[in-house]
Length: 229
Image: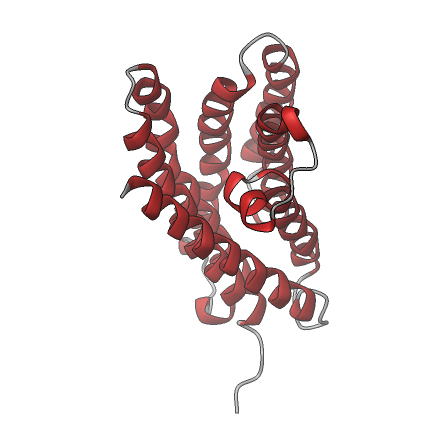
């Protein structure tokens, strides 16, 4: 049962990722959309590309194992690197849409410290175990400017049509995803260390379902300024 739930969550995630990538390619470069959206087709392409290379279900389904016996190690390595990549992408985007100078400086400082931590500790610790720590730290770092964005948005003096504001949907998607997976990655090591691998794997499906919802919110962001007849 645990395996079936996790497999379904993977399929859902891949479909949502591909849909978001297609929508990003179609709409992120349109003149009616802000330029900060143009980085997300690259982000989504890298995301689905890593899944195609190392996700156990996808490589088994495609009967494709490019790294042979080193496949588990490369999988953990690429997922760790993607965490750093994702932090940089989300951090850059949030830097564009928030106004607070203090929070911007804090964001840059935390990303720099995380990068140093990432290089130092990923070389010393088990890379599979390290990802739990890295994702939890990424969540904390990115949630701070997300909350800042919401505070600034709802304290503006001029009215904002949120239905047609791309940054609102993007920040909502990012915040929802990281706030959802934070407790998961804080507890996953405990579960695996106590032999509850099936429970940990089943709970990991939360990551895929949450990410699928985030991708749908991304699509909403890319298309919210399309003129409706």
